[in-house]
Amino acid sequence: MEKWQIASAIATIVQGIVVIASLIFIWLQIQLQTNLAKAANTQALVALASPMNLELVKDPQMAKFWVEGAEGFENYNDVDKYRYKSLLIWWLILHENVFYQKQNGLLDDTIYSSWDYDLKDFVERQNLQLHWPRMKAYFQKDFSEHIGKLIQDKLLSKTTAGSI
Image (cartoon, rainbow, N blue to C red; front, side):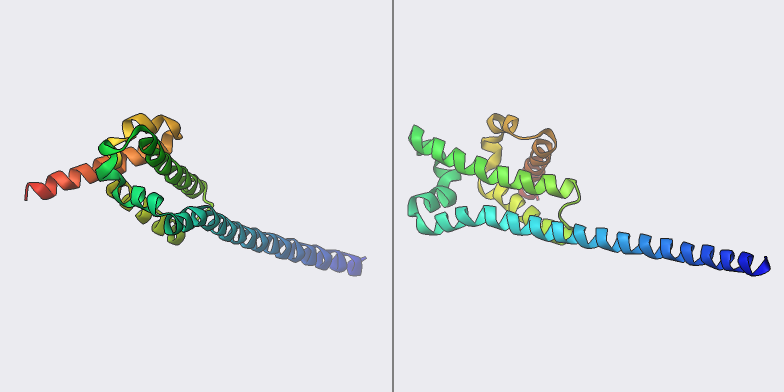
């Protein structure tokens, strides 16, 4: 009977080791899947941004809106104002997607930091504070608050820089 007890104890130990090894394997697979999902999300974001960037290169009028739109907006006719605001909204929708993915852990910090830099530059370059009060309702609350904070920080830094 003693041999059966020893065999049973060994089988229990082996079973425990197999369960632990299985859990480690499952954890590694989840980590790999998470990394693959993050990479796929990054590729999808690039695929979304690329057509607009290519259009800016191909279409001089669109590039002009992008470069001069913030300063020239008041001189535009109604159609061109609409076109310019549509560009702003499109780029903000892209950034809302980036923001949402970051909030849900689908983008790593390294990838997000470059998108965040682009968003801060966009807010400043396009003088978004001029349009944001009429546009913010188009976006989810957290993203809208994030943009509001970026605008506030931008205005605060200009005020601080101006008083030095």
